[in-house]
Length: 262
Length: 231
Image 1 (cartoon, rainbow over the protein chains, first blue to last red):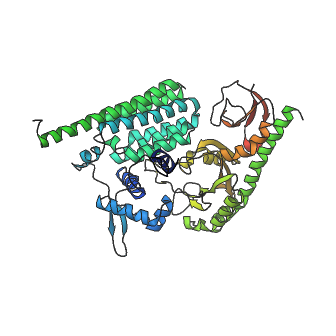
Image 2: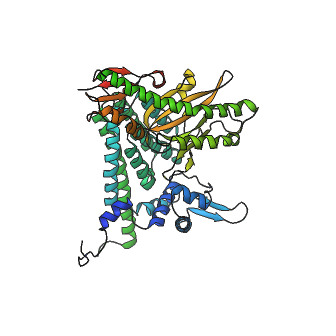
Image 3: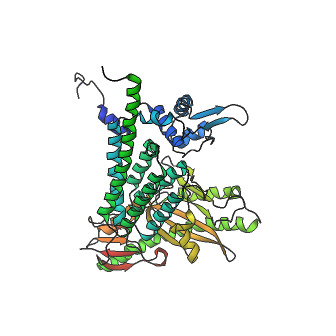
C-alpha cells in the first residue's frame, strides 16, 4: 500500500481485528469488564466471592494491572463488584438478583433481534458440529461422563446450578468430539451470552431441555451422527425462539412508553 | 530392515519415551509417599515442598510434558477430601497451579476419581497412559496423561502424573513414521488415533474395527496401543 492510498499507512480494520482475535467492540479493559461481568452473572464467580488481589488476577488473565483496574472500575459502576476497605477489605463479586424486575429487559435490550439470530447461527454451527463429531468419536467412558453430567443437570434446583451444569454438559459434548477448538468456542459463547439463555426459564423449559439432552446422549451412544447434529441444532433453535419472543416483548414496553405512531 | 520390523522399532521408541516419563515420575512419587508416611495428619500445604520436583520435571521434559503433579486419593488429606498438587507450563515458561472446583456439590465439580487417568492406575496398581482427550479442565489441549500409582506400605494413596500433548508426541514420532510405507496409524486400546502418517486419519479419529492391518503391539507400559498399516 502506498502512502497516498486513501487508507493511508496501516493495516486494514479487518486485519487488525483478525490479529486481535475479537469481534467485540471496545478496548481491552471494556472487553475484560464484559467477560468478568458475564462470569459474575453466570455464577462462575459466586455472589460475595472475593476476587484475588489485583496483581494476581491481572497475571492470571494475562493483562496489565492498570487494564484490570480500569475494568474493575467499570464493573463497580455497574454494581457487579463492590470494594471494601480495611483489614478484611478487598473486591467482592455481586451477582445481580435473578428476580430483579429490571435485570432481564435491561440485559436483553443490549441485543437486537439480529444479534440474537447471529448468536443462534454461531451456537448452532458449534454445537451441531460438536454433537456430530461426538457421535463419531466418543468412547464409552466419555459417554458415561455425559450421562453423569446430565444427571447433575436433572437434579439441579437453582437457576445458577442449572446454568453451570448445562454449561458443563455443552463443554463435555465438544470435548467428546475430541475438538479443543470447539470446546474453546463453547466456553467463549457461554461466557459471552450464557446468562441470556437462562432468562425466564421455567421448570417446564428445564425438563424439556433435560429430555433433549438425554436424546442427544442416546444419538451419540448409537453413533447416529446426523441425528445428534439435528438434536443439538433443535436445542439451539428452541432457545432462540424463546429469546426472540422475550426480546420482541421488550418492544411492547417501549411502545407503551412512547405511544403509538402518529 | 523389513517394514514390519521398522514399525516395531518406531513403537519401541515411543515406549522408550513413555519409559523416560515414568522414570521422571518416580522421584516425585517417592517424595509424595515419604510425606504421607512420615506424618499422621497431612494437610494440603504439607505437599508444597513437592513443588521444586514438579517444576524440575516440567523444565527437564518441556518438549513433551505440558503439566505434572500429584493427585491425592479422596479422603487422604486431613483438610481437603479432594486435592491436586498440579502445575502446568504457561506459554511464558512459568509454572501455573491448576485451579478446579473440588466441591462435590458444585455443578462443575472436577470429579477426577472417575477419570481414566486416575481410576485406572488406582484399580490396577500399575502405570497407565490414558487419552488422547481434550483436557478442558486445564490447558484445553489435546493430551495424553501418563500416571503411576503411589503406594505407601500396601495402600494406594494417589497418583503421580504428567500430561503429554499429542502435538508434541507427533513431533517425535512422525519423522520416523513418514519413512515407512505403507502409511501407519498409531491407535490406543480403544482404537482412537494418536498419531498417523496416513492423510485419511488424523488424531482423535476412531478407527472402524477391521480397517488397517495390525502390525505391531506396544509393550506393557502403553497397554494395548497398536500400529495399523493402512493402504
